[in-house]
Amino acid sequence: MSRKYLLTVVGPTAIGKTKLAIDLATYLNTEIISVDSRQFYKEMSIGTAVPSKYELESVPHHFIQHKSIHEIYNVGDFEKDALNVLDNIFKKYDIAIMVGGSGLYINSVIYGLDSFPEVDKEIRTKLNTIYKQEGIQVLQNKLKELDEDYYAKVDIQNPHRIIRALEICLGTGKTYSSFINKKKPTRPFTSFVIGLSMERSLLYDKINKRVDSMIESGLIEEARSLYKYKHLNALQTVGYTELFSVFDGIWDLDFAISEIKKNTRRFAKRQLTWFRKNEDIIWLDVSTPIDEILDKIKYLKKDM
Image (cartoon, rainbow, N blue to C red; front, side, top):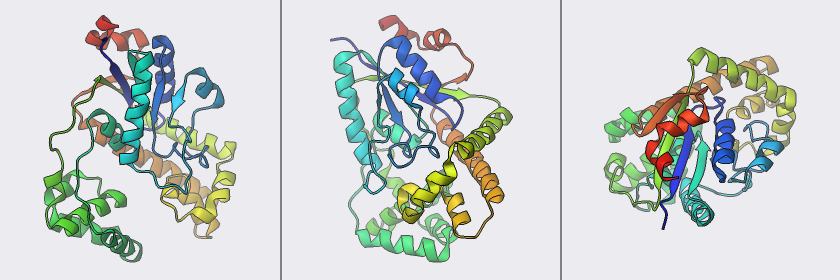
């Protein structure tokens, strides 16, 4: 039986991951697993930079707009579904391409998820109430008190991560850190991860231009059509929340657009911080030719 390979392309938003993944999948004659947790939702297209119709038709893609914003779909669900799809791809090909910027979802496929005990769901409800009524700083301080190690690692501006850690701390009486980095399941494939990089000023310029393009393409109208669902988790997304503030009469449009750009740049910075912690990633400039990329993965190229 031939060895199976998963080649993953990661990097910050707007850097060009989709184009490289399609080029690689075309070159290697295989299919793409998309790992952008906001591109999962069929109601969201412009603000999530879903690949174009032409791009989607050029190579088979999986996990693009396959769920509704009204469905509950988490990283555990994705891990299971992605492994099933990969199993089917590997029945046809020896290599699959995975691409995206959602680090936790990517890690779930490559390394497996940490195992956590079930805790009372009421804890999360109470923590969400605290977040809405008192703000994120109260939760940040509580996490620092209960699990200083995880507090030092986590993106403390991400309320979902903080609430998840706190519910484990409060529900078990143990630190969240004590449940992570345990022995993970082995995967029936070999993984290679390519990280795309570019000069930060150039990346930020691309982000600003992409936001302008989204506005021109109808992002305002798309956000307006989703306004009544703004309470849903899927809509707690850069590009939508800022426009919701316009519809609420809090911000004017020009300010909201500037905030979308700023928050997208911050998001890209957080993505880079996450990926830089992974020593397995082979970092390459976005302009690197495909042949050179494959040369960097000598063992993969030798066996193909």
